[in-house]
Amino acid sequence: MNHDISLNDITIRTFLRPGDIGYVTWMHGALYCKEYNFSTSFEAYVAAGLYEFHKHYDPDMDRVWVAVHKGRIVGFLLLMHRENNAAQLRFFILEPEYRGIGLGKTLTMLFTDFLKEKGYKTCFLWTTEEQITAAAIYKKMGFVLTDEVESITFGKKLMEQRYEWILC
Image (cartoon, rainbow, N blue to C red):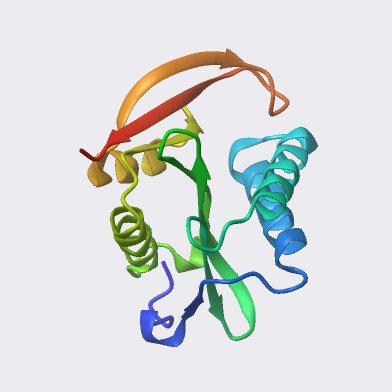
């Protein structure tokens, strides 16, 4: 945690600019390699997911939250519409020096507000067993672990976990 960084110094925008998809893909690839030893297959997974979001983007039902500090993306969260009035939480990431200042809480509150405003009935996400801090945040939001699948998708053996939140 960097005590020199204030939440007030960070702006959050809800639209993508040219370069954002590539940068957010790079953020995930670099950070998840360093913190979890994920391979480039994870980076490709993120790139494909961001492409899917862009291809099917509906401004009334989808949203991004791009946290920017001094011109650099330092956090990101995405809500993507799915079938049957469901939403998917994807690509939630914070640069390490921006953790612990309330940015994650702010992004999840904005996410939750949008989710409820749009009347989604359910929301789900996929993560891994190694992301214990993220899972704690998701559980605090109301998500419940509903499935675990053994995987080697990200370049190593692990358990992928699906969390779901029933809103009504």
